[in-house]
Each structure stands twice: as C-alpha cells, then as structure tokens.
Image (tube, rainbow over all chains, first blue to last red):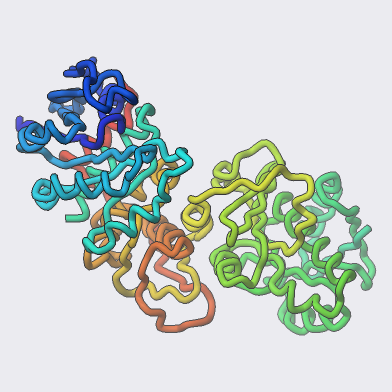
Length: 176
Length: 321
C-alpha cells in the first residue's frame, strides 16, 4: 500500500504538536527540545525535526500525520517532510503579532507543494483581542484567485482536527 | 380575549381545532375562544374546501378581520397560513403572530398594512428568508416544543426562550416559522447572542428544497469563502459542497449533486445559506421577482462516493481507538 501522508505546518506555538496528539491513534512521536531563542519567552519547548502521528483506515491502510518544526530556521525540514505528501494544513496562531503575514509566509514557502496538492487553513486562538476577523484572511488571499478553506478551530479538540482533515480531503477530492 | 371561527372546515377538522384551542390556551399570550358567530376577530378558512375563498378573504379584509388560510398547498403565499394537518405548535405560532398584528394595528392603524404584510406565514420558509433578507420583515420567530427563538438577521444574532438550543429548534420536525415586527416579544428571553454562522444555518435548515427568490437555478454557483466551522460541524456534507463550489469555474446544482452525492434539497439549502451570507456568486436571475424558484422534486441522494477519501472520512467519523 502506498503511504498516505498529511502535513501540518504553521508558526511556533500554533498547535501543530497538539493537533497531532489530539487525533493520532498512537502516542505521537515528538522531537521537542527546550527553546533557547526569543521564543523561550512564550514557549518552553519547540519541535526541531517533526511530530508524527497516525490513523488506521478500515482496510488497514495508514494515514501518517507529520508536523513540521515551526521556526523558520528549520525551513530545510519543510521540503523534506512534504515529499510525497497528500495535502497541507496550515495552522495560524491569531494571538501572534501579524497572523496575516504568518499565513502568507507559509503559503509562499509551500507554494509548489500546494499547487500540486491542496491546503486548508486553521485559525487558532481567535479569541485574542487583536485577532483579525476571518474575512480579513479571505481578503488578504483574494488576489491569488483561489478560495482556500479557512476555519476557526480549537486545535485541542479531536473533532476540530478531524474537521480540518475532512476539509482537506474534500478539497483534494472535489476542488482540483 | 380573542375570538376565532372557521369556514369550509370538515366537521372532523373543526373538532380538532376546538380541541387544540383548549389545549394550547396556556401557551398563547392572549386568551382564545372558539366562536360560532360572524364577528370573530380571526377566521380560519379551509381554502381546499371552499371554492370561492378569494371572495371570502376580500370580504373579511374589508371588515378588518384577520383571515388565515388552512391548506395542504405548500407553494408560497403572502397570506397567514396554517398548513394541514392542524398542529398545536403551528396554531400557537400563528396565534402569537396574530396577537402581535392586532396589537400593532391598535397602536398605529395607519401603518398596519404596510408594516405587517406579510406578517407571518407557515412553511414554505424560503419566502420568509427572502423577506428578512430584503428588509421586508423584522424578526424571524422559530418555535419547537416549548422553545421559541427570535432571530435578528441584519444583526446576525438570536435569542431563545425555552430549553432547546437554536440548532435543536431549527432541526425540529414540528418547528414553526413566522416573522414578527414586535420587539416586545423579546422581553422574556435572554440577551441577544451573536452568531456568525446564523445565515448559513438558516439557509441549510429552512429552505425546504426551494431556492430563494431571485436565484436562478440554472448556471454555475461560485463560493467566495467557506462557512464558519459550526456549519460543517453540524452538516459535514457541506464540506464537499464548499470544495465543489470553490472551484474556479464553480459548479451547477446538478454537477454538485452528481459529484458529491449530496441530496438536491441539501445543495439548495447550502446555496441559500451562502447567498444570505453574501458568500456566493449566483447565476443571474431570469425573473427578478416572483415566487421562490421551485426545483425538481427529486431529493434522493445518489450513492456515497467511496475510495481513499471516503475511507479517510469514515475513519474521522469514528472516535479514537
């Protein structure tokens, strides 16, 4: 059976590790280490290689979930992890200083992969007082001509992670 | 106290009506009694049984009597309507609307006709949604069981009186839907609650397989943005429709049905919701005004698509092992 691989990316602290832990049927494999740079002020640990989880389909086939490291200095890992991937979920932490710029940074960096596959955007911490409205995210990507799914989610909830994967599967099946 | 009589009713329906009035009296604001006289406040007319019912309506309206049609017809109507068979919830909803109508007429007789037409109507609801969307009606009232929810569509907010939640009321099989201009009706409810998914949910829940007035059923529909997460959480099939209608060329109702396996009525409800939420480009209307567009009656869902994506969806539906 071929490997089915879904990639979850986004800035540090957006909830990639949490998302995989919420949905994986096995204990997720983490490569977290203590934060040593500026991020230490907001996050004790960060992913340096990848997070990994899996789901088993009814026929025994596995769906592998890979979480990328969020920090840009680990950008080289992004290209490695998306190799052979089915689609991408970008998590955007709306409590960060510029979530719109964060989204565009990931859309740009994964542009080639997205062009070949599909992408879903999950907005986290949208209750932050300075969080942009969902409409602002749609406006900011309007010029691309693509209508991306942008969903507000609580990434700690399994149902919300399932919703993002379900949306990704729907775009793969019907939007392309 | 309000008096009520009927015209054209079978003896059985008349008996049911009298019994229901006795039963529901505690759930209406005013006291209602059945009257055999000709001077009742309200007359319910069985338009299926009365040939010259239009003349009866004209006569009653000339006397400023509130006339309600009682019919099995489900096409749109600007009249107050009770759908057959008689149901207590429908009757309560209509009575409450009539009370509001009469109270308003007494308060400002000169504006009665303009502000309260159409004041309330039973299903089909697409006409009500259109009236709300176009500002011809103020609030939407949806009742089920002992709960009534009021919806302020321009404000994207709602409030409920009773134990059920708004999604539960919207999904109830015995729900009744009407419009009301009366803010006073809200006095005993809780605070207004904002609900960004409100317009989408009204479309998916209240369309009854009919497109809103002015939407041409023939052509490509193109989605501009996806609905809030509450919509796919409540109705996962909407994810397939979102994806199909997000394509660069959009999709027709027929294409969406054939490719997603979603029932036609559900596709139409989703399109209505997206239209109310200003999230979709619809084909230009061939007739800008008129009744809601009736679509084919076939609402059966084609077989569910399978394959890898179907298997992943099935897995996601199951709880963690």
